[in-house]
Length: 290
Image (cartoon, rainbow, N blue to C red; front, side, top):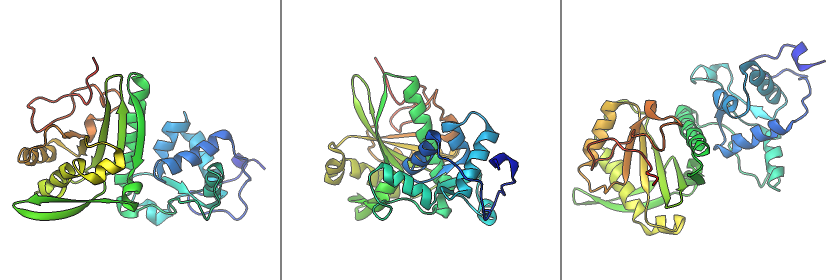
């Protein structure tokens, strides 16, 4: 019996699902979910691997029904912007074997962090846009991406001063990446901000520790350098203006770049003037290529 000839429920598994023979694309889907910090939305999987919606839906249902992928139940789905997928046991076994590991040795996300699924999907959207931008601009290469999970597992701690008070904070960026051009290799730390209200403590909680981190021995030991830029992507112009105002109270020296989600696109991310700095009046591009 073909997979198309029986009804596969949207929620819950059937007792005898139609068998699935893993294709090269199926394996790549499993690898991608693991590589993108353990979680992808339906639209992200479709963007990476499918041209049509119905084809993607049918294949992902089969992988779910056969225990390669997991996804939310009906109640969990109601709290999410769209369907999401993560590895189930059989999928984790496939990816582990590709890395020469047993399932016991393999570290994988067994469930989403439900309180920040939208945040995690936003990080992946940015990463996909960045990867596409680099493919479209061969003079720029994405040499490294370190996911948030790495910083969550092994955070660095910095010390800094605010209003003459010594403070300590663990640094957990939403990602780190390295862009290479013919002239430069530039390190970036990502901060995805989905808040809607102004944050009066952004200077104390984000900017000052972020500046201290780039200058720290911990950063040097981790990345082999003491230079970098923080990219902050937020929800709207008003919140960004508040962040810029606070950034001007610190000597950020061009370290912090700000923009909004609606400005980010593969065609704009690198070379369009969509980024704002506290020390410049006009928006600027992320990169200048001579």
